[in-house]
Length: 309
Ligand code: NAP
Image (cartoon, rainbow, N blue to C red; front, side):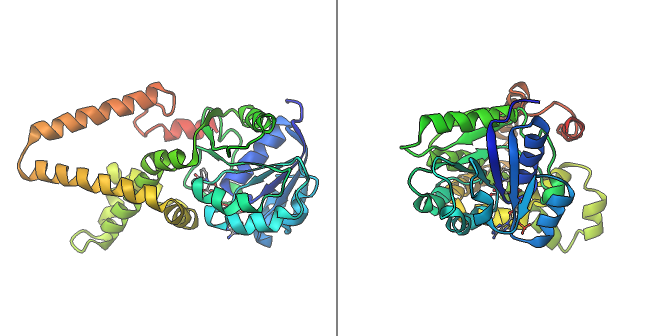
């Protein structure tokens, strides 16, 4: 057990991400008090049953009173609502952060409501699964995963260092970038793959010549991996699409162009072009495994990662 880093932490939103943070904070002893708040009474009750915190309240404003660190873990489209709810109750000197998958939009929604003397430092842990809710979280979710901060130009260095130390205690690797760049990078490595997965599974569902039972029965190959992504939380991903619109549309345009190139190569039997591309992409996979971001198991490491948690 490590020493408490904060006296009081408030967790606003207690789904997959919020509850994983709560589990780590408890296991590592990173705070004396952990106040949990979520909008529905069912989720709040479940968080209490799971003993994820030390206090529970339906009021986000009450939860943040006297908190030294506030972590907002709600769908990105709800950021402004939460910012407005908590703004008047934040303690001077408190650190407010979030875990949202898009950054420019979250900053635009939250920063204007943050009072003078409160340190608002946006963040995004690159860790998750396709599951949601407080039961889906687990300790160690953030271990060896990146957590990206997109600090504002006037961010207090001491507060940033304190927040970084918190995520390092959860096992994360730390990086910083500007919000627009974050949104572009995430559009290609996370948002586009999810959109493609939603699309391919949707296409399979719409096919008239292949039955739904055949799609399910024979899905042991490539399709199965897409269905996992396509099972991700609809609210979260609706919000990601709406709140990273420009970067996603830019990446989708590039993707469509490249797909047309592939389509043409297949039509004209240009095997050399296909072989060159497929060889290039294979090295990317190897680099990801070498960087420790996945393991080289035939099931894409999911079994190994499940065992790890
Ligand atoms: P989740 O499991 O679905 O939990 C969402 C939490 O937010 C719940 O406590 C829910 O409350 C609350 N919530 C939902 N809609 C709300 C609204 N309109 N107003 C206020 N609260 C609301 O979601 P999650 O996966 O933890 O994701 C939370 C954030 O982390 C999102 O911004 C997401 O982009 C980001 N993120 C997710 C992943 C991932 O893989 N899932 C990875 C990195 C970052 P109730 O249950 O009480 O309704």
